[in-house]
Image (tube, rainbow, N blue to C red; front, side, top):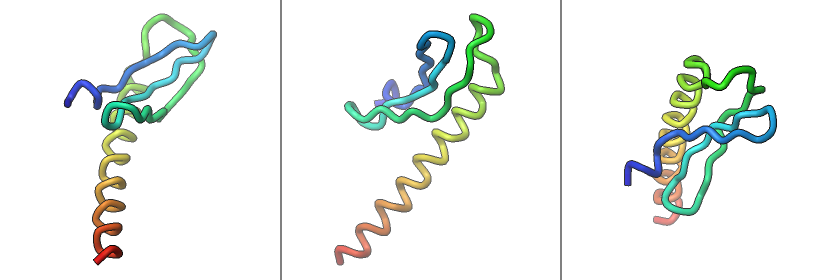
Amino acid sequence: MLRYRKVMAKVFLKYRVLCFFDKENLVILINSFQKKTQKTPSKEIALAEKLKKQYFIDKKIDDENDKKVKK
């Protein structure tokens, strides 16, 4: 489901944590920063999207390697 791959921002005191779901029950925390304004800076969103993309690339490589080992 696509809704689980959307980057979300959660605020904890003065910090914002960017995360997304992998499948339905695994939360991946990918970036955090000190909150200075109400709006999330676009550079932080761009970094989070880049890290999310890299996570799935790395995960795919790991899954392929695991399949090769099991054969």
